[in-house]
Amino acid sequence: MVTRQVSLVELPVAFARPLRLFTYIIGHSQLLLRGQQDSDQGHSTTLEVLFKDVSALSVRDHYPSLTIRAASSEEEEELRGAVPGPWYDARAFVLGERLLGGFVVAGTVFWGESSAPETYSSFLVPEYDLPRFDPDQPFPPEPQTIYTPYPQRR
Image (cartoon, rainbow, N blue to C red):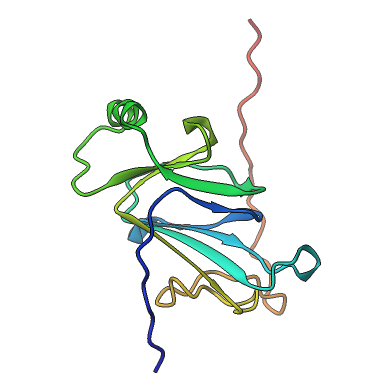
C-alpha cells in the first residue's frame, strides 16, 4: 500500500521545464498538464499538474516553462465578469505573468513528480484510464466530410 504525503505550499510556484496539455477530463472537471522525462535536459522525472473542479479555462497546448500564481484582485474581478455563474470555492489561477498566458478557474491544483514512465496513464489521476495510442489496434474510420469555415473577404 502506497501512502501519499500532501505538502501545502504557497503560490506562486515555478517549473523550469516544458509542460504540455495532457488531457482535459470534462465529466470530472479536471485539467492535467504534463512535463515528460527528458534525461538530455536533466529531467529524470515526469511532472504532472492537476487542476480539479475546473469551471473555466484558457490554456496553451505547450509551455516552455510555467509559473502558476493566484490572480490579483483586478484579474479576478475581470475573470468574474467574464465567467458568469457562482464560483463557490473556486479560485483563479494564472499561468504565467499575464492572463493572456492562460488561466484556470478551479477548486484546487496539485502537482508532483514521479519516475513513472511516459507510457503511464497518470499518477495524479490513477482512477481514470486516460486514452493511449495503441499501435496494435486498427485506426478508426476517416470521417466522410470535414468542415472548416472559409475566410470572409471584407
